[in-house]
Length: 188
Image (cartoon, rainbow, N blue to C red; front, side, top):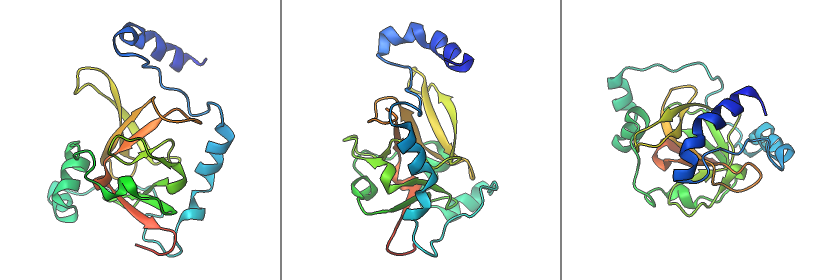
């Protein structure tokens, strides 16, 4: 166990008895090679000529530019860390091969091979495309959660929990309004 995980475990131990398992399972858990393969081969599910960001270079816009660029729901979620109602996104039921991108900046975030049905009412994924997100601690519900933001535009997408399926045990619970889906069969 590396020092960072040991310190995290030590810091969260008092909370574990109150809330169940707080220690997120590492991404290199059982089946790590398969996860690495999915992360490295996501472009095989990207439609030829798809409209995606080719660079992770930061995208900085004014608040007025974000309001103009995004729908009201996407603006509330991405720029003000809102949450859409469960079951409101058709992307929760999306099952076609393809790639999910940030609605704000078109950065590829997840492939369809990373998606699973969590039964929560939000699109859920057990891993991400490498470099897609940054994370921060969120105490808005009084207990710590890990929120994740697009690495390119800083838009809030959702929270990651440790109750997902193998091979990672993680559940990236994403607001559907923060995503666009590009099916493998054609660009978006």
